[in-house]
Amino acid sequence: GVAYVVAGSAWAEVAGDGEAEFRMLAVAPAARGRGVGDALVRECVARARATEGCVRVRLSTQKAMLGAHRIYERLGFVRTPERDWSPLPGLSLLTYSLEI
Image (tube, rainbow, N blue to C red; front, side, top):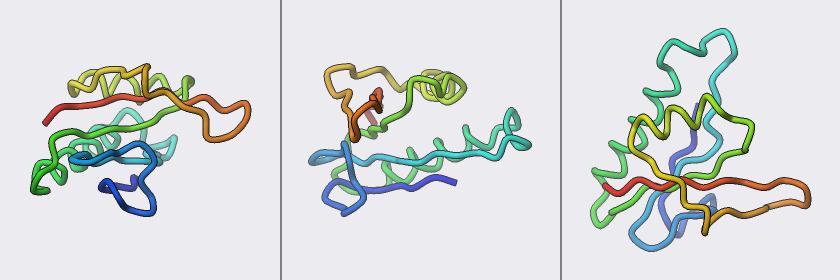
């Protein structure tokens, strides 16, 4: 599953004006490696492209989510370390962005 949100939504954490984001990308362990995560990310990007005025997709991810990082990078997302943040003490999140 994944949560797709646009800037201004109560669920948006890193999306600003003209941006969308997705959060909480999760794939069951038994389904990993079958393209599910890739398909979910592609759907979020497609929704962002269909949203008038949206020029960028952002996301936050944990450092340990290396499989997810590979998906993001393969699909053209780039690291945006200047936007990294920490929602809770001891939890640092990396950010990525895709210009659409």
